[in-house]
Length: 409
Image (cartoon, rainbow, N blue to C red; front, side):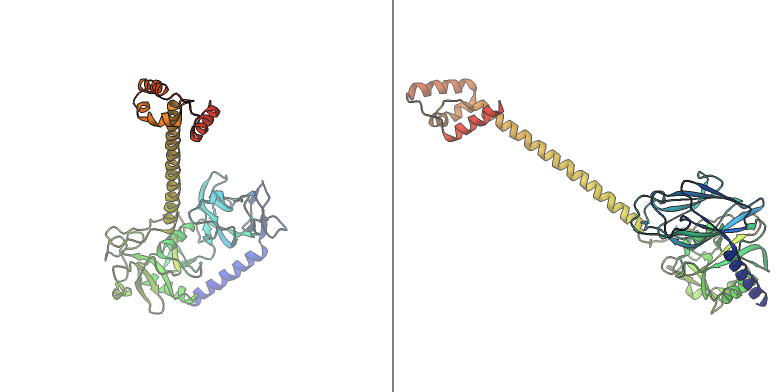
């Protein structure tokens, strides 16, 4: 315990000194700042002397940790415009952290909106950071402050622990975010540091992690043990099954609780619900070689599935609304076209049946003949002239119709 306490105190002093004497590299719009030969530094995504970033900013930093070194980055603060969870960071104010020397390198993580991974570790010696903003900022945002530190690729990253009983591994209890994370998201966050949720195969490692957690005042935390894929088949995130059986409280096993926490107040492991409870978590990585990132297990034999995520609900709702608008527009245009065709047909019929100078009474008396055929219409007109010697003026309706047809022609 005294040894662990001394290590934690030394790490705290080291971190404080690094922050106090670190150079700050501000954003220079449309420029890339190269950083070499620096063991630590601060990157701030605003211009020097400014309190917030502007619209249409595009600035980059290229960091070289040196041969045999890697980079560990810690997000000190993040204040960006709000980004909906279903929106890509490419169209928003964002910071991309890439593994390499150019903007086309592999993306380690992208930060936008309220998302904050809190710390990121590179695979090699080069890291490229690109900060860009859109033209839709109506408020002041202070951007991102990020501290980088170099460390040897045969040692643990800054603030990580090497346990005497496991000298080739590095460990860290993650207490950010302060309200904890669900189990699967905890594994994702470990991945940003090139690590996984901890595997505890022996009593000795259990005891050391227990002391570590007590020393940093963490009572409960996620570990990599679970039975997500198959009920009652308990295994670690790396698919191994070795663990001290007396540490697991079997009374906590249930069909709905599939992920395991370590409770330091009881010195026991307990099953908890994977997606309804949040806790701090412990990450583990290789000290010398690159750590393999393990997949997040998925249930294969459960009847009770989790509800559809909010992202998909929003996407499907927007898509359904757009489809409804398109179908309504098509139906409206079709009805208008049918009505226009019907009106044209009616006007053509009236024009064909209209005979200027024919009396209202004569035309009413011969409507049936006009509908039968043009020949019969002519005969009816002749008959009308023979039987009716008085030529009557057209009715009001006939005069209006004649005036309308004259305007059309």
